[in-house]
Amino acid sequence: MNAAGPLILGRGLRLARAGKVVVEAFDLELHAGERLFVLGASGTGKTTLLHSLLGFVPLAGGELQLLGRTCRSEQDFAPLRGPLGLLFQDAGDQLFGPTVAEDAAFGPLNRGASAAEAREIALQTLARIGIAHLAERPVHALSGGEQRLAALAGVLAMSPQVLLLDEPTTGLDEAASERLLGVLADSGLSMIVASHDPACVGALATRRITLAPAPR
Amino acid sequence: MRTALPATATPPAPRLRLRLGTAVGISVLLSQLTSPGLLLAACAAGLLLALAASANGVLPLHSLLRRIASVNLFVAMLWLTLPWALQGGGPQWSEAGAHHALLISLRTNAVALGCMALLAGLDAFAIARAAAGLGLPSRLARLLVLTVRYLGVLDDTRRRIDLAMRARGFRPGANRRTVAVLAQQLALILVHAMLRAERVDLALRARAFATAPQPATRAPRPWRWAAGTAALCLGSSLLWLLR
Image 1 (cartoon, chains in turn cyan, orange):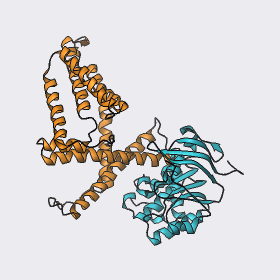
Image 2: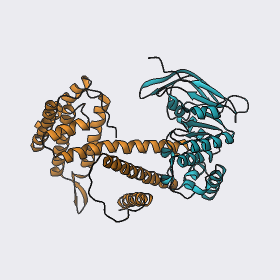
Image 3: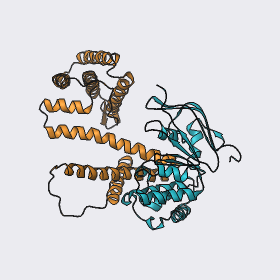
Image 4: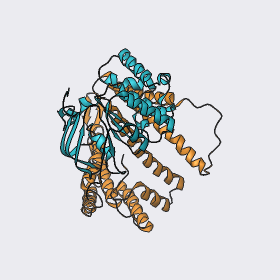
């Protein structure tokens, strides 16, 4: 889809949340294989930035190219939800199905897979990240670490080209955090990560940028 | 449902009670009027007061217009049914029904505009406090606050789930899968609500709030309970649509 250029290219991005500008004149570039960390204090717009890359927060200014396509409207962003996979800050918000396997099958079903194909993809993905034993567990009965891995399985089941991760290790204990970081490192995917966690930054980051508070 | 209102300082308690008491009194008075002319004048006065509140910045104009539209959507439903009498030859225009519909429309608008003007800028918490001050039992006042608060929380949950569904490529359409997914979404909102209720219960008990002893029966599993409730809601809706 985008052989040579950057996977994500933003120029002069301006983002607003609840009518207040939180990101101003921001340039963003992500190349294949990069694991770009977006750092910055709380409220500087890290989550807003990630959500804007899926079209959930409309751009108040600037130009955005995702996987080689210029994106402005819902019609531009909709087909990219899948190739760009977002892991939400609160995994509980993201888990949708009654069981872990059904949740992981949700994305493939949205992309037109049959029920059997979607289940097969889901089970393979769960096995790949080492949580096949959770397949039939109700999503609300999972621990925090298991929820985060199950949510990641739902994203990976859509075969994304880029991962957008919002504070992926926040609230996890050391073991769960290490396990998640291992899965992310092994995925080989390009990613943009918003994180405060030094262990997460140290383990994964190939490049870092800092979001400064927008000028008043 | 959003509970956040324009950031205005909460008025002192006596003035809050006066505003709520006046709104209730005017509503009772208007509900007894039977003259269309007087009711029309009350509507005009209410509209002027509401516009004045809007001009003062207490009630944003778009908010005022949206509320007036909501009220009149209900009024429009009345006009679809009330002025018609079912007789041998099918539905026929009824003067008496139309007169009733006119009176109800004018009363509804007059009361709504009056309340919007008098209660502009107050959130549910302030209104509940004023109602408690006017003699509403404190349990009911607390129930009012919790209802408004948790309607907001449920709406937040719905919006977050909606975002998560879109992030994974869900696009609603006129098909069976969309119906199934929406039923699943409803069930999930109920599960979230129940889990949150359990957490709130724990938080209350952690602060020494005494509840009645729990029965020894085993509660149904949350997912089944929510799925059953969602199925009941959907089934009832379908029966209603197909009746």
